[in-house]
Image: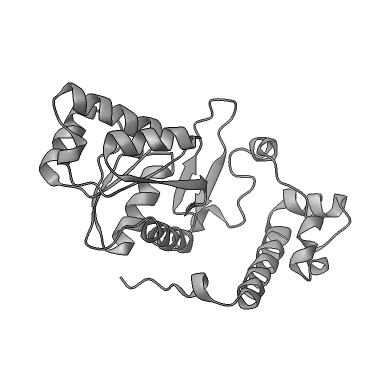
Length: 243
């Protein structure tokens, strides 16, 4: 796959025009199809037609996590369920999980965004990506997986857990990119040390870490123990972007 880097290089005014056009399309769609948003707009005495510039973004009411929980499970969906091909959700450890539905087009957009993010983090089609993010209702594992395939890289869908086996796979398969939570990356280094494997003997170049907060001190520790360059990937349920 040859990634389109046009968004990263286009003039700011052109990018802002695209953002405004897509913002207005999103507002039109949710106003027409999601009763919650129509009510929110009416309470704030605005309609989508009132948003004519990016400066008007401040007029749009916030959506809170409580709003998502109040409309659990599918009350925020803007398309009929027969258009939804995938459902993901948060863990729900602090209350009802927040639910995200994806159309087929959403899945493709997500994969392309993740491919661009992985490329920004140093991945190429020649890399082998050891994907230790969790698979399942959590978006992390599948997001990285589809992005890696879109990029043309090889992906090992190892998920989380069974850490000793992961160390064997890292030794035998020779992956060059590690994707995981930062805390699990450190756990991998501890287990590798226990079984006598040094990350200096492995082939990792970059680690792309996220899904939980971490500090610069933790980044330095990861880079030292795993012998790679650690980059941060911040996220929301609809996709991920590299920092």
